[in-house]
Structure formats: C-alpha cells, structure tokens
Image (cartoon, rainbow, N blue to C red; front, side, top):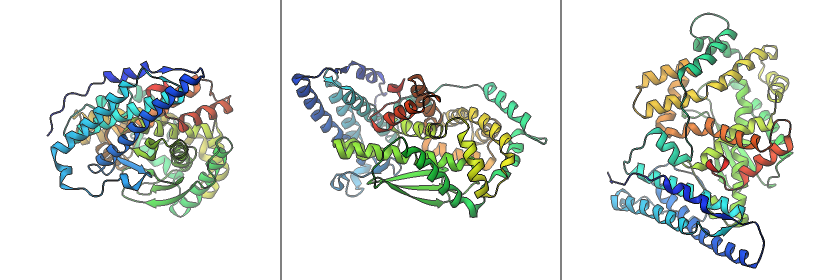
Length: 446
C-alpha cells in the first residue's frame, strides 16, 4: 500500500479568491483569453488522468465521448506498479497547484464557475487515487472529499416519529415494515404492463420538459429492462445526445416509480443534464465535459437535479393526478385506492436520510450486515430483499448514497431560495436549467 499524506481539505477555500469581473473592456478580454487557455490545458490533462484511473475501477468513468486517441490502449502491467499509481496522485496535485496559481486572475461568471468545477473535480480525483492505493477515509471524510458536501446526522427518533405516522395509516397488525410491504402490493405494475406504463411516463416527462428547455433535435434514448443490478435504474449516456436507460426488474416496480424513474433517468434528469453538458463540450470545446466520472461532485449535482426534477416537472399534486388519470388505467390498477397510498409515500420521503445513517455506520464498521439490514427495515420500511440490495449498493458505491437525498435538498434549497418556488414556474425552470447547463459545484449552490 502506498503511504500518502492525509488529504488536506484546506485548499478548497482558495477558489473563493477568484475575482468575478463583470465589466467589459479590452484588458478583460485578454485576461479571459489567457485564463481560458490555461484552464483548457488543465482540462485536457484532467480528462487523460481520469481515463488512466478508470483502468483500476470499471465504475469510475461513467461516460466518455471525447477523442479516441486519449483512451489508454490496454491495461498493462505498469498499471499495477505502485510508482505508476503514485504518479497519478502527483499529477492530480500538480493540476490543483496550477489552478491555485490562477486563483487571482480576473474572470467572468462562467469562467469562475468553470474554475470551481475543475478544482473540485480534480480534488475528488486525487481522493480516488488515494483510496485506490489503500488510503482510508471515514464516510463523512469521503463524502466531503468526493462530493463536496457535509452530510448531516440524524437520530433514530426523527425517523421513528415518521414511522409512527405511517403506522396509523396502514391496516392490520405487526411490524410497520411488514404491513407496508403487504399494503403496497396492490400498486405493483404488472410485468406485462411495465413497458407501456414506463413509455407513457417518459412521454409525459419529455413533453413537460420541452415546454421549458430547448434540446438538440437529434437527442434520443432507448429503454432496456435488466436484472441483477444493485440499482433500480441507470442512465448510460453514450454521447451524441443519446442515452440508454436501463430499468432493473429484479424487484417489483410500483406505480409512482414510473414517473420517478422516467424523470430521474430521462427528462428533466440525467439525459437532459448530459445533453446540455455535452453541448458545453461541443460548442465551447470545454473538454472536461466529454467525460463523466462517477465519484465526484458532478454526481451530487446530477442526482440532486434528477430527483428534484420530478417536482419541477410535476409541481403540487400533478404527478398524482397524472398517474391516477393515465398510468393507473394503463397498469390495470384501481385509482380509487390512490389517495391513502400517496399520503404514505409522501411521508416515506422523510425517511430518505435513514439510508445515509445505515451507510455511514456500516461503512465505518460500526454495524454488521444484520444490524444494517434491520435498521433499513425498521426506519426505511424496506423489505428484506430491498434492504439487502441497498447493502450491495453501499458496498459497491459507498458514500454515493448521499447524492440522492442531500443532493436533492441542496438543489431544492438553492432554487427555492432564489425565487424558484412552486408559484413561480418560469423562474423554477430557469434556475433548474442553469444548474444543469453550466459548471456547478455543491458548495457553490449554498
């Protein structure tokens, strides 16, 4: 194992020293040109560094559609050499040093956003190399270094109060988790109806999104149904404005998840974000956006906007109304039973952070597997099968879980604090589009 120094989080604050200059003039144009050129060089080295690290972890590079000649040819014996790994760590450090040397340059708003994005992404890259070399971080340290976010802690009492409210709405006796699992069976989408229901949900999400966000005419996607994955659904972005959306059918899919998954993976979620960021690459030649690395602040923005995008596309009760009117009949379900079900699912959203506590304690070796599964059943009301799937997710993706709930809250708070409230749909969509079409960092949204 390579012995690295403890990662220093202090340099993160140096990005605040970048001067944002909005005035126009000949001098500023020249400064911007020089800064742009310097960041372009850093961006190219960043992409090549990420591609090299991807040889160690097949999940690291989630999407790449940049120059083919930048890809490492094969995984050679040198990849297993500690000196080579050390060189990757050192290269990340040099790129951070270069950016810090630019921190006093004058910049306009978009350049400042780009600077911050590159800095936080490269800090996450260095952290990943540290971990690949055997370096250990706690759950909270990892979340801060990889995702630029501080994760709040929650006590079991907070979740128990919500569980007690849900218990009052459920029929029968026994544990709340068992009663919930039994009750919601009546809202499972039949397997033979799944594609029809999901396609209808995607069509509605796309229609609502295109009313507010202009996308390239050639953008498209394909849906596939798979099994044996630790996630519920996944967007594999292939470049050229095309995505493959995979839906995991190992566990039952419930009626409200059709819209949730369609919005999250498609419109206005991952597919739209990736399309708009690819436009940055194509139109500005910002090569850092020809690659998407999974374990980075970019993922908190991506998952947070994808989750909040459901509320943006379906404000108020419109999701429930659409599902009752269109999706319930398509699935052959009884919409007259929906009201109580939706009251419960709304309460369940308040249990989202219980997954963070499960992951934190499990990954920090404070809980064993059985303890973690018990917690998820008790405070996330998961079935045992779902809890076991969650555990596999923790083992594979570690602190990534925070990107869904904390990411959503960071995005939601930013948009609503800046006027994008439910009664100002135009502003909400405008702010949402800004986040998914410009370089953003989680700390920059606070």
